[in-house]
Length: 431
Image (cartoon, rainbow, N blue to C red; front, side):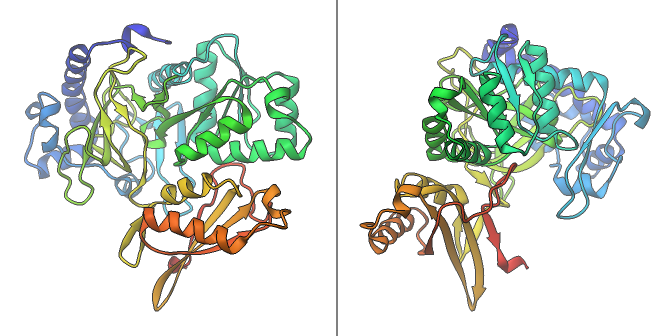
């Protein structure tokens, strides 16, 4: 643990600290962010009405469009000249969301990232190859400064140039990689193509994977292919970036750093607060952020929460894996489908490779086509009954997602690889 005195706090101590910080944050946001003063007045509440987490249902939600509507500086709580760094979304779907940090915010974020990286067991002496992108995206710099604070040696390779990544990984005896899970799958495939034997030629022990939803079957594949422990990392740019929650060595839920974040789950349709253990949309309130405090920020991520003690000794609320985003959910003929459900089925089918894409279009009715690569072994297997394989995949899929898609089996290396987030869904109904 990086900060054991905080990470091992008992539930009563966590709740006490949260409530103290929450009351200060309500007053701070109200007095320093006109957007929140207006929200409070419209809800007919005052900061002093929020005395504990039990009162949070009174506070209006904040959504991503609120940040876009106040682009670029409208939700800042400090003068623009007190901001020492900005990060931003790409803005590919419209106005980008801009996030500002004071010097104190960056110090807090670095501490959270040091905790995050240490959580599964990474420590001083490890060598981390940081393959997340540097720049406006929060991943690269977030992992970089957290690892340095922890005392880990950082190789800032950033994204791309896979052959060079593999050479560095071998020559410099990298023990930790930080990247998206889809790129980790590609790395393992590329390593074999380049003549490496990953479990023999590399010194990898830990993989810190985030920025996209991934399944347990994907975890098994990554661990088997690269010979490391694959750990899930959760965060959003709006909430500093990565470093909101992280799996420990037991891989049984992601520990939310609840001294800095108050978390709720809500019914995504009604906004009703749900009890722990019920699947709902994650909602976060930041407890100490200076530059851009967010109150009851709706993430659109769907998950269940556990408040039970973990085997590692932490009581911090755990996310029992994010199953998907409500805005990533596909509605096919009235049926709700998450890409992660499809991935689970595909990745446990041994004849299939690691790359797939889901195409959705409409010709009178919604249609789904899943294009998936065969494994190199299956592709050259003359005895492979492709018809029987497709039927087996369909039977599994129908039992999980109800609807019956079309399956296309592709030659290995047909689908374009990505150095960042993989493009898993192509929804032609939106074009």
